[in-house]
Length: 116
Image (cartoon, rainbow, N blue to C red; front, side, top):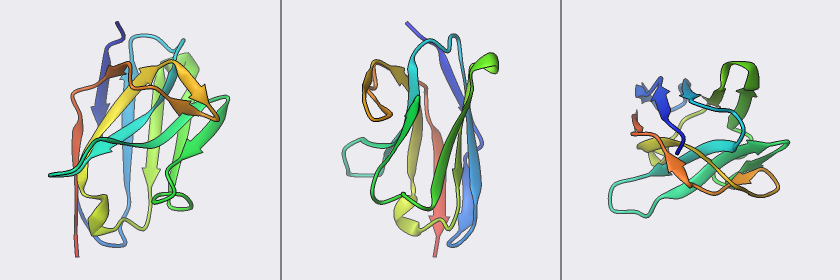
C-alpha cells in the first residue's frame, strides 16, 4: 500500500495554468495522474516510469515530471480548458508500458475547476 497526497488544485479561467504536486510514501512505483469529471469514468491523464505517457486530450498542454529523491510527482497544466474540470488523483502502481501507470494506489484527489 502506497500513501499518496495531492496538492495544488483550484479554480482558474480558461487559458490559465495550475501545477499539481503529489508526495508518495515511496518512489519505487510508476507514478502518474488520473482524473474523473462529473458523470464520467475515471481516465488516465499522464504517467511517468522512465518514459512518459499522456492522454491525447492533454498532450502538448500538460507536462509530468518526477523527483524520485523526494518521492514527488508533478503535473504542470497549461492552457486549461473547461473540459479539464475534474478531480485529479495521484496514482502509483505497476507500469503498463510507455509510461502508463496502473492505478493500484490512489490519493484522495484534488479538485481542478476551469471556467470559461
